[in-house]
Image 1: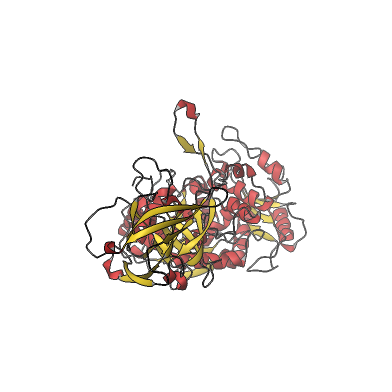
Image 2: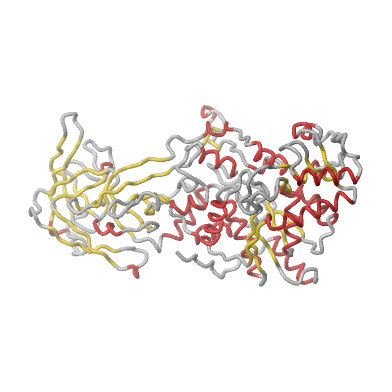
Length: 587
């Protein structure tokens, strides 16, 4: 499927656009080059979508270009599978990159810059363990402790670093650190590690290297090599900016990119950190990276979200320095708005109850006319079969209804959507007392569209003709994580989402260490919602026999549904509920 191109409507003015306008007006920059630089260690999620839209759209608005660059500096967690998935997701969102790059293509140049730092006395080989380096890093109120290897000679550091590259040492035995200021109030400037030993096969460079640059060192060099003018990052990189500028300055790069930060997108009821998403995939808590409950782009695509809705959502949430959490229901609002004029409307019965219309001629089937979308006449009409036996929703019948119940019950009359009035005459039960069938009568004068108005009914219910109904599976989703009470219900306080982990809570150095050590705090799994997936078996209209993966429909009263791309087969469709028809969320 060809990617849908973004609308030409530019995003609203925000501070990054103002910076770019100023840079172009002053002559500081003559063009705009941005980049989207994911690490190929997992699948992209909704948070990445905001960064993708921002980078591509601002560059496009100012006649610039955007690079897709894979920051593949950690061979332990990276894979070609993720590279291909990321390219697929960016295209699905509707964007085409102006250049495809890999950080690993620059490893030789990065090594040369590291040697330059050593020669300038600004980098040294440290033999302390990772734990010891972490301990001596200090705190926000206490300066760090210099390494006993900090004052090695330039010659010794060059020899040691060459030996690291040659494979003379084991993983973790030595690292190369920048020599900056162990008393700096910014912990990121306290001699950060810039190279470490990792004996692992790399998806792009194979076994050429056994030392790899840390992301914080590699990233500014990549920007400089590619001529990026505006390096747009999320807010957790703000404290890293002094080191970014230090690398650009001390490595003496010809190009001088600048880094700017904005608040990342956070959503309620889910986690957005890739290490946490990967854990759920690896432990089979979810049905892969594309599980429709996941916040990954492949997950929401399989669920049925549209790229147009995601782009509109990203624009409307804005670009600012203020961090906050956005209700997932706001994203669902944009999905509904996008689908309401696109999705054909049809009928599905998810929890079927059989109805026999006793006064309808046996063996007869007629075709009724039904609109495909009452809000979009251009979608035309369809014909649906009607006969003596149909299915209705079990919840549309009550034997002993409460007051103001307007659906079907003994002696009551309702309208079958696009069909006739029927009245419940008899209730059939099994040996356990469960209702298994209803016997009804219909009034042939009440056919939909006939103009009949002799009497009114208060309830309209949907249905599916039984003999030609297509058996279908329906997957109904709730948030992957439950909402925990922020305070005792007895105190009358509103429930709030429990705190869920986020990679932004860790510093960049800690993130990379956690990745390489494989450490993930699993306590967040206690907040999983056991009711996040319900599977129902029911029926859809006969004309749904030809429904194909990713086809989207509005099922009367149930919501918007998407044909599942993983499990649906011809004649046996599986439908994922994209969103319900309405939400309690107020736009």
